[in-house]
Length: 67
Image (cartoon, rainbow, N blue to C red; front, side, top):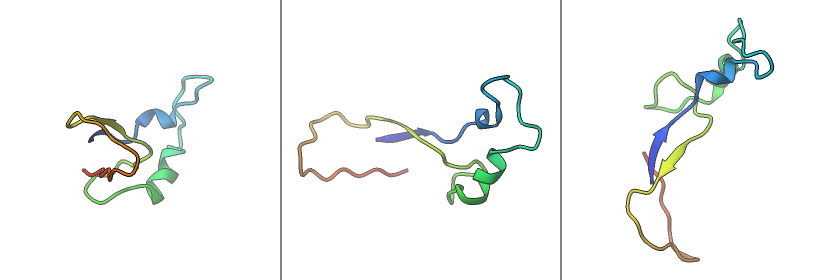
């Protein structure tokens, strides 16, 4: 697997109005505990992944995910 992306600024946008929250929440709070070393100032709230090498994964196979 290859990590493609981390958090998104749209967490600050009110889904009802489309207007960004003026105090930076909830991104401000997420930054206080969701940052990961080596990934910059953005909080990690989810990841998109892709296949690095095709193959079959069977029950009991070890699967490793890394950056």
